[in-house]
Image (cartoon, rainbow, N blue to C red):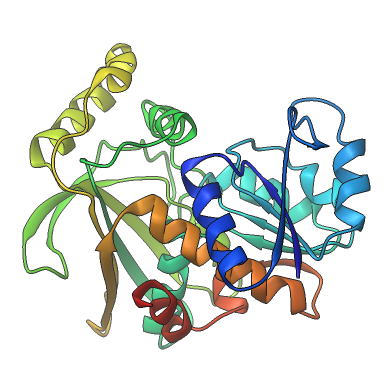
Amino acid sequence: MKALLLGGRGAVGTVVRRELERSGHSVTVASRSSDTPVDLHGDLDTLSESAIDHDVVINTSGVERADLATAVGDTPLVDISATGSYLADLRRSAVGLVVLGAGLAPGLSTLLVSDVVDAPGDAVDVFVMLGAGEKHGAAAVEWTEGLIGSDVFAPPESGRVINLRESVRATGPDGVMRRYLRADFPDHVLLSGDGGPTVRTYFTLTSAPMTSSLALVARIPVLRPTLRWVPPIGSDRWHVAARNRRTGTERSASGAGQSEATGVLTALAAERAAVHSGHGAVTMADVMTLSEATAALNA
């Protein structure tokens, strides 16, 4: 398999490259300064030309342009973005196969939700914990900043839902009760449709003070820039859990290193996308099973 990797020098991209090359695949890292020049902020003609010679294109760059799905044509595209509005636009722009939301949330969370849904219209709560002690790239920090003061995109309930304002207390898969903040992780967008589950996602950090700080900044958005100056505090542990409100059924997964896990899952999604026979936008739940994903994480 030949993979064209966008953002290959980032925290997630380096893991994707490592995993694919370990499996014997060829990886071309594309950027403005590489031997395969692609400017994701400019004209995408060079991306279109490069995509023809590859079996899959993987976007780990953090650049969100819905016309990427058009530019790659019939070559499958795997995108790690967690922005609901962007993924909705990407779905509409798909020409060939597009895997939406590869990673932990969405991605692994999508698989967990799919596994606990038992009947049409089931309500599922997703609880995501990310490591406050892990140093994240600029794109991840910018994405988190973007939540501050913004609305959850197309929430399942009527009316306005503001990110990080509503909170619940819940016990995670590690047995610890924490405060989780409602956040715009987009499984409710990816899995919406006739008979699809009603999904609400809640987010916490391994550091309780850091979670409280996020909640404070959400109520005083002028403090948003302070997020860039907060040093990593705590562990790099993560977990994702999905709980069916009607049946009480819960599935979860956990580990250490968000970027590492995201890269491993994205590499697996790229391998599956390259041999997938379908067209149009799909989720991680359409290209792999939960057991396959967890096996890859535990390998």
